[in-house]
Length: 108
Image 1 (spheres, rainbow, N blue to C red):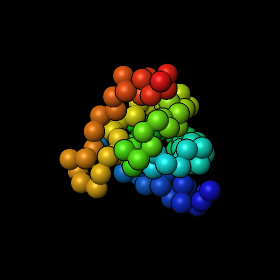
Image 2 (cartoon, rainbow, N blue to C red; image 1 turned 180 degrees about the horizontal axis):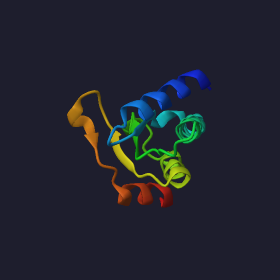
Image 3 (cartoon, rainbow, N blue to C red; image 1 turned 120 degrees about the vertical axis):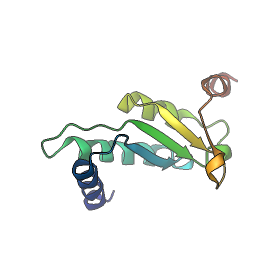
């Protein structure tokens, strides 16, 4: 819960006006990641601007196989999609989230 860091990141977003703002989080952290996402989202919305997160990137997704609840909750909270999941340490290990595999793992 590093509030000064979140405010600094929010300031970077406001001053640089990027085309895309992605929240990057380890899939392993579960509810802590959701708390961080909410804190970052709040920091973006304060200070007289209303910029929101455009998407979520979940790293280490290959290590959580059936624990995908955090991905659903993050999407629900922000309304932003999971843009990519990380399944390794190289750029080509960034993959699009397979909604079918998430649903399958939730109901199996």
